Image 1 (spheres, rainbow, N blue to C red):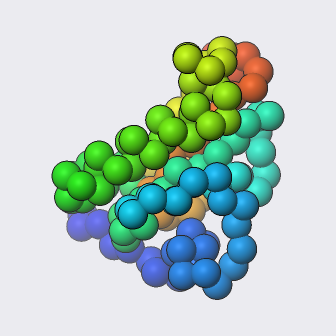
Image 2: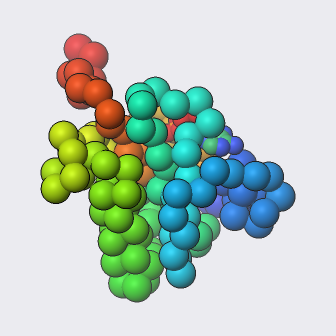
Length: 124
Ligand code: AMP
């Protein structure tokens, strides 16, 4: 099945400036902002500016520049939020894709969660 990007999704609207966000970091190809419904003391979403649906779409189709920029930005977010292994006690980075991944917003995003022990990765 081909990737099909819905440009009316809420993160596309954030990127177009149609709805506000609490920005943590912005770079050439990447935006990071606070999750509106945080699951941990630190809960930041890192998204590419390009129209990618999911992690696998981004990893397969984005340019080298976008992929490098995204990961450097995510590392900077961890440091800035005080959860990197240099600055703090660690974090969890997760991304959901599609129906089985229980993805709500169909624009690739990496959740950076921290500020407390995050518990087991998935329920059994
Ligand atoms: P996912 O289930 O992985 O697609 O996660 C979507 C995330 O987007 C959830 O954690 C929501 O709380 C978050 N979210 C939805 N709308 C907004 C918004 N306008 N600003 C910031 N975060 C949002």
